[in-house]
Image (cartoon, rainbow, N blue to C red; front, side, top):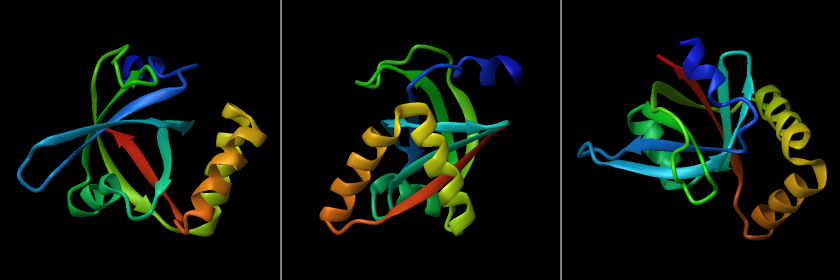
Length: 126
């Protein structure tokens, strides 16, 4: 398990694979943060990945390049949507620390301008 966690250290992206009802995997490169052994992804609440996690929380994650090209080994996990304000604030702070406050706020402003809302996915490796 430690090797699975360590491979994400210092990496800007992870490839999040969620699964459709028919079992087909869908991979999406995303920004992420870690807090201890937990991974967090902030994303648009109505996105396909959120719907797939709500349906079935089984995921696989791997560090990757911005285009989704894997740079490590796939790690199985379980994801849940977390909607409490405390977790949202924790994740926002961790994202700002990792990627820079201005950059994160620009993405948030663009999301808000489109009328979208954020949610957080919490991922625990198995």
